[in-house]
Length: 287
Ligand SMILES: [Zn+2]
Image (cartoon, rainbow, N blue to C red; front, side, top):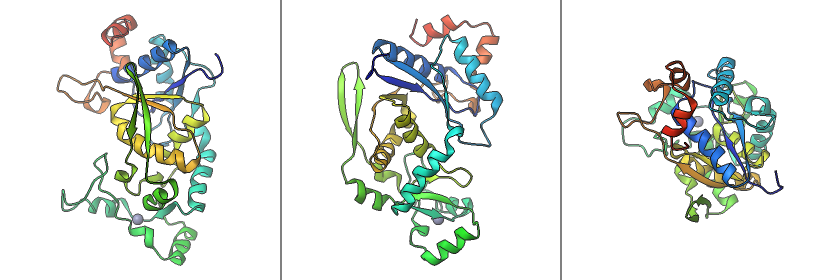
């Protein structure tokens, strides 16, 4: 590969079998990388210790190889990089851009009542009102010393002061590049590290995209709103912002996004039913 050649990635989470939506994203990334003279990496996004099962990681490799997709080694596994995420998180804490939140899940759920009365983030989660942001520092130190369960939240107002009010990113498309304005504030004080792991999806993904030199992020439209938060985190952490493209989501017959939880057929189901990789490529427009 030439230095400076595009680097893309396909980054599934091993919390279910891959379905046609994953196949579309994987094939699109590989196809775009080839057209641009670059490469596509595979990343296993397994920060969730409860949902990420070794058998499911193995199944991802099997399904992708069956589709004829092969990736450069080593394949990055997020669970191998917890110390790097912890250090990125601690950097934000040291700069007072993140604070511990001791609210229980029940307390946070209660914020949703009465229904509709609370502003919500793009995922539909009620915006956190910042209760723990103004906790007395002595009480915070006491809670932490006692090992009180907590997440870490970005102090959005402090982050915007630090990174400036203007945010955006460039979308690359067949028709050319387009600058998109980002509004990270709509995520409120987002969780950047969970109770059980020193990161969240958002922190790990911006760290990894930079660590792997990803120049073009191609992922589903369901993550388009998250890009607003990601460009802010990149600025705070001094990381480059890749180019982005958010692709269409495959829908089932009822018009819903494909998901194993809704009974969408997995690639393994299709394989067992006699469907060939060639048929899948043709069906998805890569024939
Ligand atoms: Zn809290």
